[in-house]
Length: 286
Image (cartoon, rainbow, N blue to C red):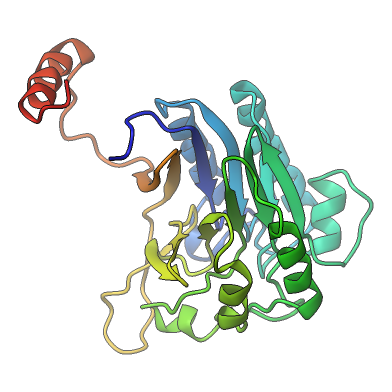
């Protein structure tokens, strides 16, 4: 039975699509305001967060001023939480500008692959972007690097993060711009300590498995695709969310947390705790 307290908690944000101040995201959506609201939600998470994982499409056009704006909004919250921010590149991103203006690194157009350790947990980031294209791809060298890294296990296991999910999609647009090397990635992580794959890109929150390993596609900060639209028609809605990933010693839980949803009821701790205690006792948990 999964224990009640997670060993590690990560917060995933994805598909920010920030534009420079004064510019407008398609449809008039203020993506910067949505990101700020999402981060206020993150500050309310009732757990010890270990890292913020941002799975791509940080900027809408890949411009320097957009990455500077991401940094100005995200990093103060990360500093307040005292946690690192782990960034993955998306198809809207420019690798050189991202490195120079968000990560303060030398600009480079090489894939942004990296390993970040959060205590005993390992986070591996793969750059699945193809410059100038919307679909995703992984080079043979990247897969070889991944296999070599996974040859040694991490004490708390590994979280793999990339922009393009290694899953099909219920959204026709997302299904037309997939990750091409889905099977190859599955072969690389099968039998390793990868506990969950985190992705974005589709603008639809969804879950599945790859070689028996859970795959979580987080909901976007920018517009969400309405998959109930018939045929290949596209309809988008504003329904931002962040994802909470709780890693237990013997399992994991991914939770979509809505941002800015209308509050229907609010019951304080002092009223809820006695009720929860009764329910736990009835279930034999106390």
